[in-house]
Amino acid sequence: LVGDVLDLAKLDAHRFTVLTEEVDMKRLLDRAYAAFGGEARRREIDYRQEVRARPVIMSDGDRVLQIISNLLENAFRWTPDGGAIELSLSAGNGDVSVAVEDTGPGIAAEERERIFRPFWSRDGGGTGLGLAIAGELAAALGGRLEVASEPGKGSRFELKLPTR
Image 1 (cartoon, rainbow, N blue to C red):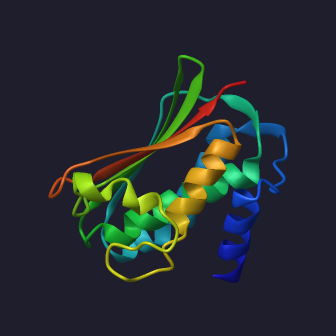
Image 2 (image 1 turned 180 degrees about the vertical axis):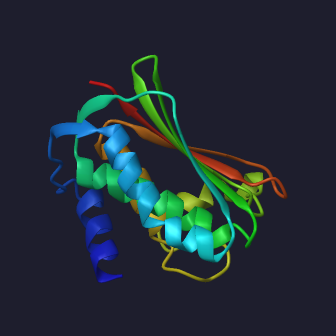
């Protein structure tokens, strides 16, 4: 919690250091995917990875991994046992896209903006900082975080980062 609050404060104050290095997005995706494999097996979640491209970008690999891990953590939090989660990687139109799609309860239209606000949580659980930090980190990396969701049909969170 303290680390999350400090990260958010640094992002808000624009005092956040972003490293620039070559990031092999396929390898990074594999690391994120592997971290949740045990939970998927335990909860009988149909957990899949789809790689449509293998881009290498200039970005901060640790921060990109932090965003993807946060999206996966949320997907596992909201997806019921026996549900499905897909992690995908694609590239096109100057962007790299990492999407996390789940079969959780979905998010109502009026809540979609609020989920990115600090300390706001749909169920009172968690710190309410994960998506706020993920959104700010995406912007700091020159990208964006998008959400598409419908109540009863799950959610799709997509991180889009520039290829250059």
